[in-house]
Length: 576
Image (cartoon, rainbow, N blue to C red; front, side):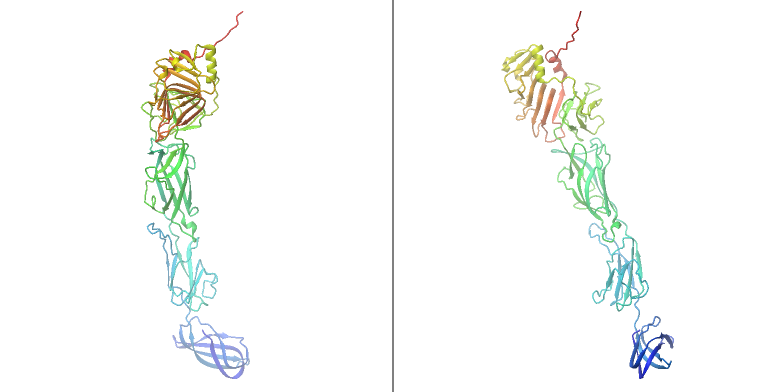
């Protein structure tokens, strides 16, 4: 209650005051308590004190007071007083909701909304106050509201407690004495549902674009298959990506799990922006999320909780993920063997097109018609990536991938020339018109371009003399096709790429072989191609799912030239 004045006419020493109030409810006087040890010497006129009332209703009441001096004499007085009502707790508290509607992605929430009497002070806190009962201590409040500054009667946006959503409030009429607390417990929201981006794998091969399938699949995906960043990320949001089968993959999926409650009270995410930076498969290069034409990569996408696919620009549940061939200059052989030259690796495309009608639809480096025909031979010093179980050679998949193979006898062109000159019959020529019969010819005329017509119908082994002679294989028709069987042995053999040459028939043996550089023309060898030291191949098709070089081994050429290409081995024994 407010101070109660007592009036006296004499000077007295006040020791105590006994206060009574008239209760209008039961029409009787009730003691409000005794205030003792109030000493005021020389009291005259107004003397004031305060007392409290916890049971009387608000309004105007009569008050009577007995004032005692040191000699226990008392003076009685009566005066009206006004009792201020003690404020009640807020009238209501409503738990808020979390908005996760992707059509209006504000993703904000109001944990608790408090409604209280106008003109009142409000103190709120998540969790309980230190002083839970009526009192003046609200120093631990999270927020306080002054009606002079914030006159609104509805207050929301009270921060969440990461450990739960219990908030308490107190109100006050004067900003000094606050009511007992009122608490509201609200459940943590349900985390947003997972979001998924998924779809088929695509192969970009130059101008080619092919969707992978169970028969035309990628292979040997490493772990982890994908690299990406996410914002926001852990611990609020976690994303995992993978393929349907690491060894024979043709689809993928990226699933985002929302654990938004982990980040209360500072945030509650229900979307994340994924930036895909890589997908690893041997022999392929990452392109990214594209359209079904393998173009327009867009590797940054935003996904929303509960939405399958991409919300913007379209809700697409069939999102292609594209890889391209790392090396478009890949080589394929039929009925042959491969050894000695280490060119690293060859990737047989997941979606492969045939070179021509002589090629076979087998995803091996060396193909064959076995068991109904010739078998593929061995593969040495070469790694082959393919999606089948016999990537090297059909039908046996003979291979040594240690790259440690070294031939016991390595007969280079110059060594063979020396052997011919010592052991065989040959003719040195400086003009190709000197070729008039089957046999071995040593060319001494320096670098030379030949078109195949120079040999007539003869079976010829042409050896270029020296360590620097370059023989260029060319024909204006694009086809090098001698009538007889021809073997050309030189330090370097180049295949013309200006016409460009499309195919060549014969046995081509050199220390260095250069197939030329093209944008949309491969090279087919009918016979055999042997590079003793180095092979440079820069040919490719615009659609790189076709092999850039296709070698179709023809054993009859060796048989026809056997007297000239063979070497004799002698075994001497001393007789006594």
